Structure formats: C-alpha cells, structure tokens
Image (cartoon, rainbow, N blue to C red):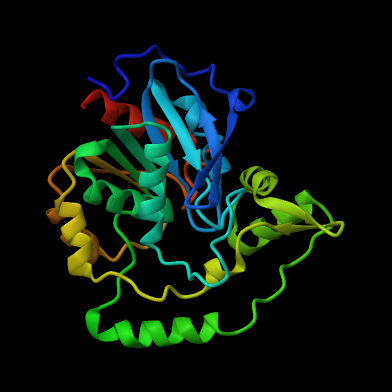
Length: 299
C-alpha cells in the first residue's frame, strides 16, 4: 500500500498555481516554504539542497500522487530567516527545525523527501524520531558529511577563523534572470531550473537583485559528526528508505555508502539518468518520479 493510499490522486492538478505559501515562527525565527496540497494525501516534508530553496520541487511534485507536501526553505535559504549573527550554521540544527515544523503543522507522522543537503537532514531526522516517520526518499544524498574524530579540532579552527572575518557583500545583478544565468554559468544547472530557484531565492537590494541565501552558508561547518555517528542514526531508521542516485551526479565514496547501506534496515537504491539536480531538470525528472512511484507501491 502506498504512503498516500487513503487519499485521492493529485497528479496533474498540483501545478505552480496551486502552491500555498507558508510561514511558521519557530523559536523566534520564520521558516518559510510552499504547501503543495493533496486532499487526503499523506503528509510529507520536503527538504532542498545546499543554496537551493523550496522551488527545487517545482518540476517533480506535479508528477507525484497522493502526497500532501510541505516544502521548506531551510534556515538561511529562500524566504526563511537567517540564523542570528551570533549563531553559526551547524548542520544538525536543521534536524531540530524540521521536527519543530512538523509539530507546528500538527503532523504526528510524516514522510521525508530530500535532495542532497536535504537528504542528509532527512536521514538524521528519521534516525532521531523514527516512530514519527512513514517513509524516507533521498535524492543524491544519504547521511551527512563527516569528519574523523582526530580531525575535529582542525575543522573547528578553520571554521572559527572564517566566522570571525567580515561577511563578504553579496554579488549584485541587474535582474532575476541575470542572477539565474550566473547560477547556470557557475554550476551548469539548466536555465529553466536556475530561473525557478532564482524566482524564490533572490531579493531586491537598493534596486539590484541579490541571492537571499545567507553568505555564511558557504563557510565550513564548525563541527561534523563522525562516520560512526551517522551510521548510528541510519541504524535507528525504522521505515524503508529509497535512495535515488543520478548517473552523472555526485561522486559517492563507495566505501562510505556501502557501510551506510549495511547500517540501514531497508534500503532501495535506484540509479537514473541525469545530473545532480535530476529532479529539477525537465529531461530527467520523469525518471525520478517513476522511481518514487515504484517505491511507494511497495510500502
């Protein structure tokens, strides 16, 4: 039975015009996002990749059925507030934010859908509150970046040195389209995909357009988990997990991911055509949707 078997199908009726903006106050900060409604569908929290935002799901979600999706802008991204200037960006703080959002939405049990950074966050959320998670779908990521214990002091030293320096001013652009083109030029992301991210992820600054993401997101994390700790989170996940990898995506360290796969109780790995943003590019999104649909049928 699929995770949304209790509800009606929503595919085809869930276009861009059906989105509903959400803004939640969590511990004095606003976490924004987009609700892609599906009446009677099973609730899912969707988490984007590093320096992206909730618009990353604009191509994929209309192809999925029976999922009532709340796509968040993680702290410092999109339309969500930045963390206070005195607070560094610790990866693990996203876990607390996601659980707080689920509480604010009244979601006792929910699924997780994540891409890259968001997939890493989803993995840790699922290991922290396994009894509340119905399914986990990871695109191009499974578990967090890690640092061996003996390298942790150097990691913290490098991070603090950067955090103590002045923040660089943001790059300015003449238009949203120019900001999107800069993203395409820097990363190879398709122009349509970059435009979707830029429409949500930029703001006006004295007549110019700048990306709204906090520049500190580019700094080294002050502290990372060890590989043993990440595997401990994965081992606590009680629900089946789907990992979708792109044939031309991230270069996964095989030894690391084999260890993580062994730690997981139920993991299905599917490789599809595409690059890292396989879910946002028009040429490859259908393959991702098909992998997710097949996974849901087996739940």
